[in-house]
Length: 507
Image 1: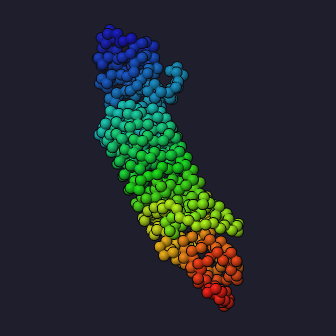
Image 2: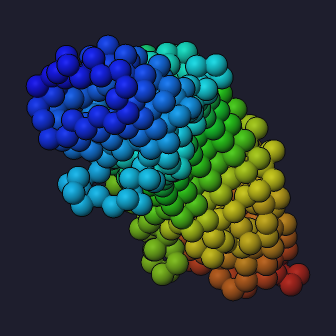
């Protein structure tokens, strides 16, 4: 169970074989064997070897196969004579000692010695790079380097990371990318200096712990190519976050964040997830945003587009009567008339606050309704969406490009206070479906378009209209159902020079 004292008296010993015993500990006094070249302790119970071994300047070979080694002294790297270190237990290779091949021993030896060499250098550079070294378990010796500012253990075979990694309080960069991690469960709030966190290309499905929100210095979060379903609400407290990449996950929704959250966020990548409703409640208030990529999700609604538009800051009658906007679209394009009573409801939601946004990508979704508030995006240069699927605003405007679309939306915004909507000179051939939502309008100008045939009877729901201009179109008749417009006093129609007077209105 221990090294015989008689062995220590053999000062000329060059080879020592202690295989297949019950030895639990090697004494530090083994250094008296200064002539020793080979030390074999296979199949014993020792968990470490004494740090004094580094002063045995002639040792060329140490074999610890079959021993439950937990850690090895960093001083082994100073042993210039050491050429072979056998220890598959330290790497936890699931092979019995008799079946481990010479090639594997040599490969693991080189990796182990290389690992220690990197850790020795890290004491001076404060940077430890153990990436792409086929490591399966984290070397506990690294925790002795408490001054580390950068730790890179990416491109290995880790399935877990010890929770004590949270004790490296000086870390500014932590790279865990390209491993097999199932979770990252440690005390995040201790990493008060962490600025860059890379956990991408793993298998992480478990939501990050609430204390993740304690990373107040974090500027870059790379968490793409995992299996996240959601993110913790505490993410809103990452006050320094600039770059956030959550793409290629399984995220279905985001929690609501306060309007003052994530004040420094510039780059947001949430493409290739399973999001159904664009997370405006989480990311609609960050004025610092310049890049948003939400492409290739399942987005059907882009809040507050579900209530598009809010001309009087109230819920529209279609919402109040529980008539879905999708039903309105279906009825409009199928020609079904819809007549309901008008009433007011709840206050309007806040607008999007993306005054600095330069790129917005929402293509590859099921987006039929673009948000009314897009008109404020004056600095957008890259806007992508699937024009063929958009129903609101009218596709006739959408296909004319971003400049015309923004002008059209701005006209709607101008109507919020004046109750006067001017959508003339847009080359419209059909009545826009979104007009059926504008119940508070008093004046409507659709002149100088390409409307033809019979004027859309669904305009009869705009019962507050007092003036409507549809001149300079190609209309041939007014539908009888428009008699519901009882407040209309001026109705201007010009079709091939034909004018008529009826009840104080020009027809």
